[in-house]
Image 1 (tube, rainbow, N blue to C red):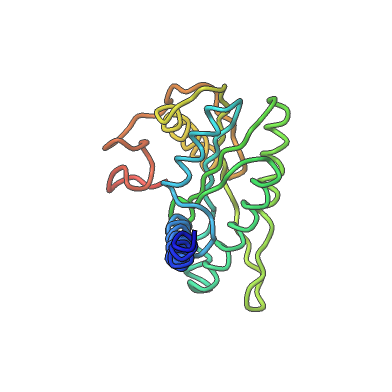
Image 2 (cartoon, helix red, strand yellow):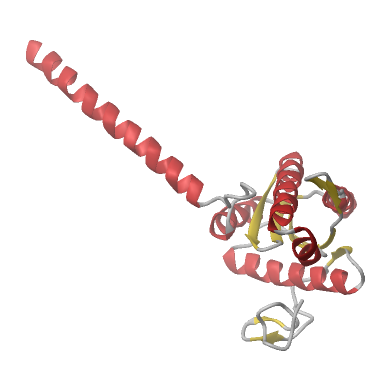
Length: 215
């Protein structure tokens, strides 16, 4: 019995050390999966969580792009641009939490989200709320920074897998681009069939699709 107690006592610090090490590793992994500026999850983490959400029930996928963001950077500097991105991250986080969803920063001034949704009427209400939240001016360094937003969204039924998420993001991106061409706001896409062509695997007209095209 005494040998057992002695062995357990000797193993306790080692077990505690491994537990602390595992906790630190998990925290490092979680930090690496979040955007350091906005604290939103990155694309890889979003893909995992969004795929689970799509499989669980009726949902909607959103793609969001800020309007006049480059103008803020060029006129007021990158610190002001960072303030706009942080405010956008905070507002998206709050909106996603209220709507049982998850939001991500894909890079630059592009964001994505997925939420549960029970009806088209609820989705329209959620889009109105998101649009209002992201359109609010941002106050930084004694200045009021005005930015706009273009949002594309597409609803879907339960059971969509990773390939379904890719198709939904493509359609949400097309709707976002159409909203941007119309002056901003939000636009709801219908169906998964693309309505625009692709260049190098990306939606025609999107940044990076070709050297002559820009969203």
